[in-house]
Image (cartoon, rainbow, N blue to C red; front, side):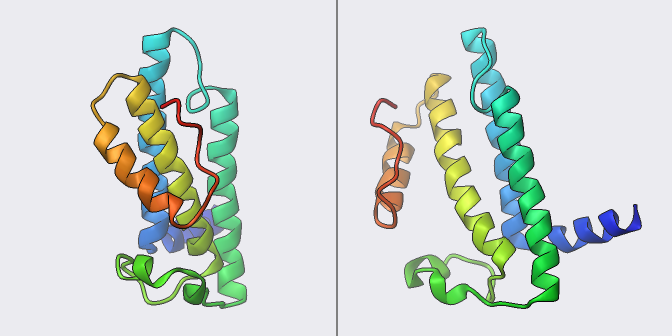
Length: 143
């Protein structure tokens, strides 16, 4: 139990891990609202969503342990334009994957907000433009 508390304390010290935890909570929140509206489970609130979210958090916990054993700085893999927004000078493996998970959750949050009927089209377009600069694996254009 003490090891779990220490691990959580280490995770809570990282701003990127904090953002990742918050993104999971917000995605779950909007997934629940969407499930209530549609009267069925969805990819954010249901067994698939729970497995995905637990796997993200568990992998970050494992990677935090790995970061404590092997200290690697992956900040060079982050594009310079993104680095200016990050509140850190060094990126470990956990934070690197945390950034990827945040991007994934952000897409899911905006999708859920759109399907809930919230007016987020302009925000979605900004995020889509930002993500399209760094990846070509965006979701379909249905939302």
